Image (tube, rainbow, N blue to C red; front, side, top):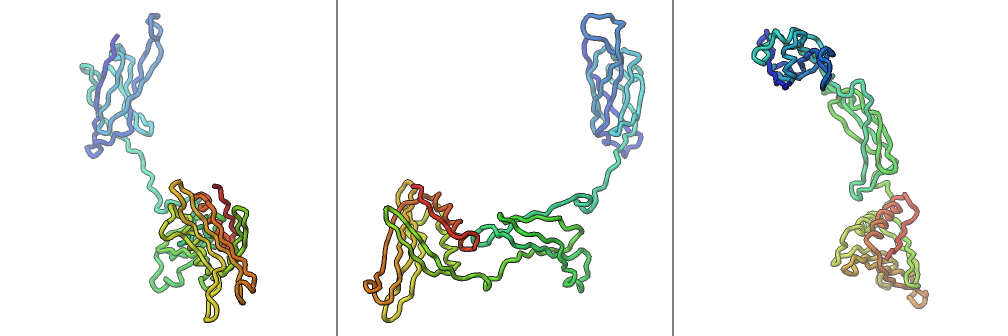
Length: 333
């Protein structure tokens, strides 16, 4: 026996409900027989479903014997499962097509979304604080958010600016907390960073270096801004050959003695395979002449990689900002 493709269409009584059949289905119940040679008296109740297009059109494929089955029943079901129409299939078939069925669609009720998308939910506000210059995480700092409630009168805007969120940054600069509840007209975040005039503006940099059997130590005072710029500059790739990152410090000169360079550190490209030449100059200070004060003075040169500097630069920033006691540059070349 052959399969037949049967088509049909639903039409509403109310013309305003045209094209509202999305989600509706056609259900066909009939007597089926086991496949293959078998006793034709052996039957079982079978069914199939077919979707209805929004405009009411539908189609299904069925064994042509079903079209002659006087027990076959065709139903129209709504998206909610309501049986909207039921009739014997034989009474509806006309030239292998289902006659037009007049039935209004059942429109599912719509749940209107609450104007507050966070209503009934536990929401978390998460963010991260980075230093504007170094892009390093700002750690262990309080983050406050002040907000003006929606609808606050203009004359009360100053006093309506209330704190609605408080958190503290972790070691990676991240913070999180309960999302502020309620509608707000405006909000402002404040991070408790110490004022520039309260920050330490100078640090004594002490360098100990060892290379090729030579070693030395030296120290000098630098502004913390100068140190931060140097630490940020040495992680660039590639380093500029015409103006390599350099930092020098020592004692200023006067009419009787020239300036003294006590510490100098430079990183510059060395060759085409990516090696970087580090030049370190260290000296002890003198007041009565180099010979009389037995000045020690050494210049060392050695090679490092860009990977070494990528580790050393952030380590310097940690030491400058008090997050570490020292920064160590280890040459892997």
